[in-house]
Each structure stands twice: as structure tokens, then as C-alpha cells.
Length: 145
Image (cartoon, rainbow, N blue to C red):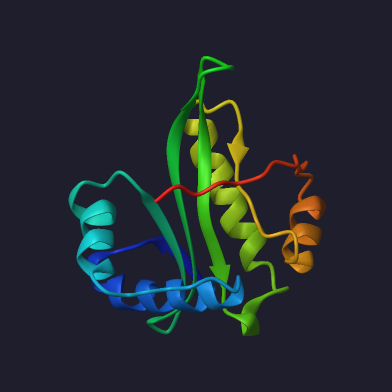
């Protein structure tokens, strides 16, 4: 298993993982137009960082994250937007390795903390994050289209 930065050739497999991730979180997913937009953000504009877990050219997981600013802290934090592993590799240390690499990146970028979220029903993810030593904070998330 190799964990590395995503490369342009990975885009179709990343999109496949995104669809699986959405299904896992019981969310709607429409792939229309996503390839070009995601490609632009990951590789042309490079505003979003992406790590992938690869085995023999097959992507088995991914994580995306971005540096953001917290007004209350007057400092930067790292927001982990997505982390997803195919079911067959969960529990084998890959998620821990991904999180450690992202945490190291946050430290290099002088971010005061990492933040992320998961649905309340995703008990296995919540347990995983707590084992890492993460602390949860309850908030409501709103959407305005």
C-alpha cells in the first residue's frame, strides 16, 4: 500500500471514490460536471490537497484537505473535507497513516489545529477519530443553495 499525493492520472478513480463515499454517507451524488471542476481545483489551481492510498495502480482511498482561516483564533487551521477508504482496507492502519500525514502537513503549514466532520450515524468513524485522540464538538450544519 502506497500513500501519495494525487496525480492527474488519478482523477477518474478519485471520482469513483467520491461516489462511493457519498453512498456510504447516505448522500446524493451527481457526477455531472464534477470531473472538470475537481481536476481544476486539485491540479490546475491546486487549492485543495489530495492524498490517495494506492495498491497496484488501484486507488483504495483518498483524503482531501484545505488550509482555512478561523476568525476567532485569528489563525489558520486545516480543514479535512473528505477521507474515505474502501471497506476492504478499513482497520488496517491506512486511515491512521493518512491522518498522520495530514496532521504533519498542517504542522508544516503552521495551522493551530485540524477540523473535520462526520455524520452522527457513522459510529465506526467516530470511534476511529476518538482513538486518534480527536475531540468532537456538536454543531448543526446548514446548507443554503
